[in-house]
Amino acid sequence: TLDGSQPLTVAPKLDKLPLADLIHTLTSLAAKGEGTISGTVPVSYLPNGTLRFGAGQLQADAPGVLQLPPEAIPGDNPQIALLRDLLQDLDYGKLVLALTGLPYGKLEVQLLIEGRNPAVQQGKPVKFNIKLNGAVLDLLTQNLQLLLNPQQFLTKDKP
Image (cartoon, rainbow, N blue to C red; front, side):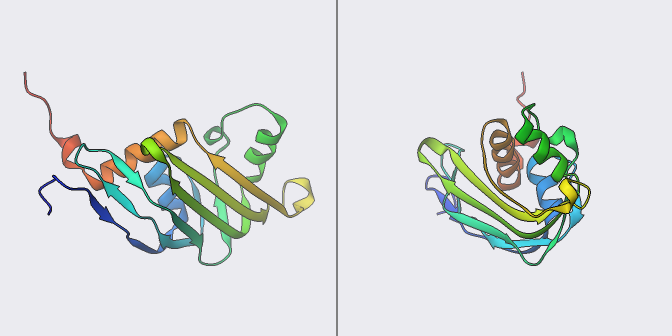
């Protein structure tokens, strides 16, 4: 039923979404670039208003370009600095975003990127395998909740 007493599960097939638009919509990061991404991400909306993710995967349809501003990637160790530099203008050949729902509504996101930035390390090819967590995932979950239930953000409590 759709009365909110049972979980509502959907597994939308996302087809050729502009990658930069998707990143901006889900994380509010000012991403730029070229390329599209497709795949399926099962999501259950529980009666208590929380989201529960199933196993899903989004993958780049073809090579493209991803540009993230340096401030989008916090941290100060050498690996993070290199990642920050590379993602300012990365020509990617492969990009896969795997999502796995964990107990207690947690989400594990694995990002695999293969590509190169012509301005960094003489354009040498690189591979990233990154787990996202913490504030990035909290923001992602909040934005997905907004997409699934915009009414809750439009309703104001009256005194």
